[in-house]
Length: 112
Image 1 (cartoon, one colour):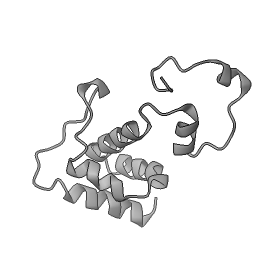
Image 2 (cartoon, helix red, strand yellow; image 1 turned 180 degrees about the horizontal axis):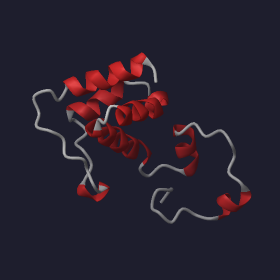
Image 3 (cartoon, one colour; image 1 turned 120 degrees about the horizontal axis):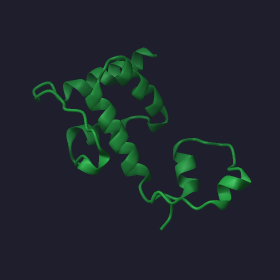
Image 4 (cartoon, helix red, strand yellow; image 1 turned 90 degrees about the vertical axis):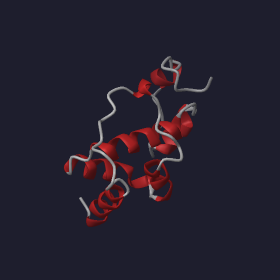
């Protein structure tokens, strides 16, 4: 884990210094976080290629609020995306195998 990752978690935490303790979101169907909330706006200015590092840092520090915001930001970015766009977003360079390509996405995440 890099020092920059820990600093980012601290910067995120300072956004909520006067807020009550965070109650982790148990179920995504409880609703997405507001796009204009300080936590969601925070992630508009970070390097998305490093989200995995930020998730590791938030787990290491036990920062559930940051994990929730990262997950909701990712959901917002990929909702309704094609498989190709999701693969680009998650930086998956390997092509899909033939069997995976033949099965449509029934989870509601693919093109509709």
